View 1: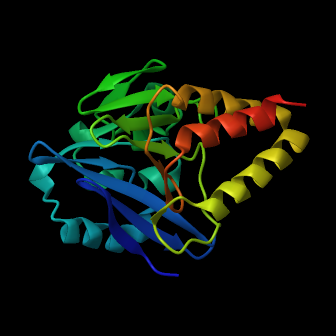
View 2: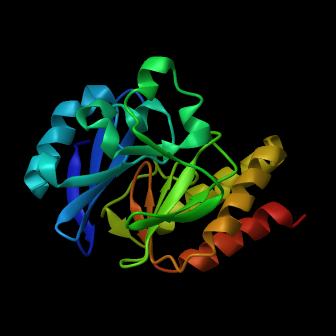
Length: 230
């Protein structure tokens, strides 16, 4: 498997690095807005060379980076936060509190609450994964950057942006198994999907694997029903 950099929507790119140990892709995203760039997540530190190369290929210059937003505090999402000035790095306050003292120095901004407007994007806090896990939403492109609340890291794909029938089936099976083995986790996932339904999402940009396009709301409603129906 190889690393991937690709335009996924208007002025929005995905950068995927492949982690052999996990047999899974790790995603970050770049959005061009108002002559500046917004970045979402930053991979594992070990993947820094490709991450930096991809930013150069996209045309991102350091002085053009306005905001770097993080979906949650795990190392595969904040591993290169030190590449950026702390004043550009934003993370939810509840995840900031869970970082060690040194890692906290990378983040010059925190945001709090269950949802609202940030510069250029909207956010919603999600009740699963980490204390401060969030999804971001771009109302201009209708792309939702969902972090690890739902992802398809090990499901095969042919195109980066696709309807994703195989991925949807894999996630249905995962959620059904989760409902049987860990009902509390399954309920947390369902609650998060209900929160995400408040946005008119057209592209679901996950933390690992392909980007889904089309019928996002019906897919979420089906998954919620799978958890809630006996």
